[in-house]
Image (cartoon, rainbow, N blue to C red; front, side):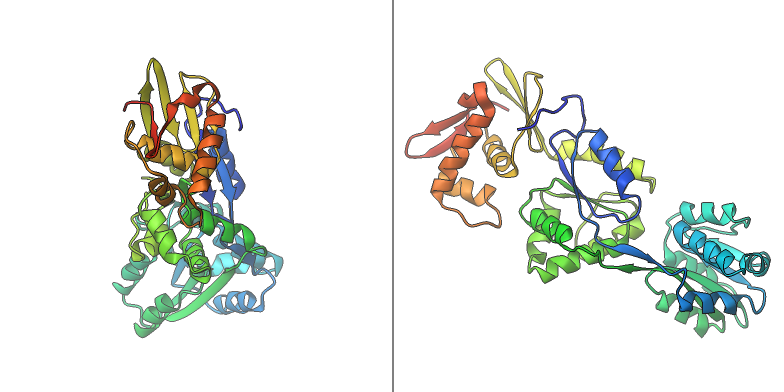
Length: 375
């Protein structure tokens, strides 16, 4: 058991972080608010500064002025300029981009473009690549030169649609997504999601969701993971573009109004307690169940192991109602095999964890267990 600060808004909650970029920042924000964080990068970014494909694309851009330039990510745009500088092409790239109509996919790409000395003509409020494409297709593209800075994966469909309208399209592959070097943390997070041992999952890119669900497929746990995300595990995405793979899988994630890490964390602070917090009374005592933590009469909360927390949550759904051992097995031992002796052992451990308040868990002979409390 670990003593935690009761004033921390996310005390008791376990949150999975799948981000590769800025993971340390997101983890720090969550831990500062009391959360236990499971770090499991779903992808890693492979820079292509030395890649021949990027150099060829850059040199193709330099053969004549560009009519349109599409910047899709801040990190990708900065990486492209940095690589061009390294090859001695930085000044020439700025010259060919200067007369172009510059389109940016969201605030991060916009900020990078401005920092590089250019100004964007238009940026969709939704940060959707589809809207960038629609904007371009509304123009006469015959004979126009269009550079498209890609983000992690190729935008073949985007480029093909422009070419069908007569444009010369130059894809610029600045970086690509690759699997993490160590897949074991991601596999463990998938398993924890299937067993409902995390309370929320955070995603900052659509490819990370695709990789996460792909890992679930590999482990044969897709159905269990999706069920967890529909029921007890809160999926949180940085924005609507990121959320699309979950929506296509039938999951409705929560997205903050602004696509920022701080806004994500504030959204979790707001939504998670509404879904996973119970206030109970036991005699004169006030009992709060928050994630895996138990807070009694404002004392320092106690962090329970996930299984014991699941047992306590099941009992707390209807305080005073008797749950049989078989019913507790069904509710708390999700995705694992156990018998009724495991229930008895878990109840004994739970009472030990509750210490002076062990009487909260009542044994009803020959029937099961109930929580000596009222909602």
